[in-house]
Image 1: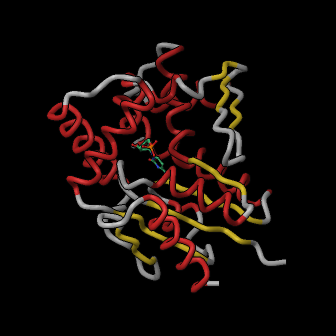
Image 2 (image 1 turned 180 degrees about the horizontal axis):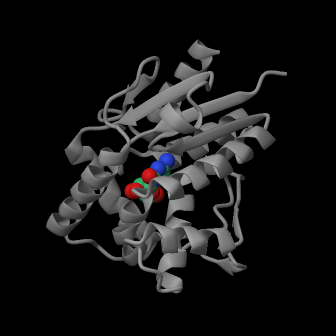
Image 3 (image 1 turned 90 degrees about the vertical axis):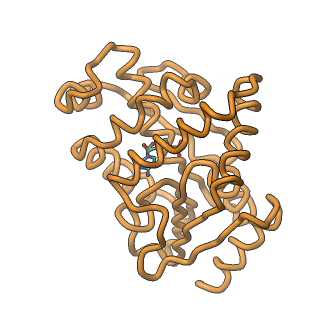
Length: 223
Ligand code: C5P
C-alpha cells in the first residue's frame, strides 16, 4: 500500500498543531509534533544544566538520553529518561531556549533522522514542524504550508498560552517573543514562504473547522 505522509510546516501561532491533530484523527493517521522533539532537547539541556550554546555538549547530552514521543493525536506524551515532560516542554523557559538549540546543525541532523525513522514506521502519518516539507519529508505525497497574518497568529498564540498556563500573557512581550523566535527559526529554515510544490493554506479568515476542511481538501486533491 502507499505510504501516506502529510507534511505540514508553518510559523508559531498558525494553528499547525491543533489543525494537524484534527487532520490525523479525520484520516485515522498517526501524528508527529517535531517541535515537541526540539522542546524535549531544550528541556534536557535545562535539566542537566548543559551549555546550550555549546553544540558538542548538547549533542553528548542528546546521545546519552532516552527519548520517547507519542504518535497518537489524542495523546501528547513526551518522555526523556523516564520523566514525563509533556507539560514542562511548553514552559516559557523551554520556549526561550529552543531556537538556540534548534540552530545547531548536528542536533538537527540527529532529530531529522529520528523523525524519518518514526515516519517510516507508520503507514499513514501527519507530521508538522518547520522543515518537514523541505528536509524531513520532501517526497511526501501531500505538503502544506499553513499560514496566517501576523495579528491573527499573535492572538492565537496568546489564547494558546492562556490554555497552557492559565495566565494572560503581556501582549507586547508576547509579540516580541514570537517575532524573536520566528526570526531565529527563519535563519535555519525558510517556513514563511512555500517551497516548490508546497500548497499554501492561509487560515487568516478561516475558523478552526474551516482550516481543517481546507487542509483535508488539499489532501484529497493531492492524492
Ligand atoms: O512548533 P513549536 O513552536 O513547538 O516548535 C518549537 C521550536 O522547535 C521552534 O521554535 C523551532 O526552533 C524548533 N523546530 C524546528 N524544526 C521543526 C520544528 C520545530 O527547528 N521541524
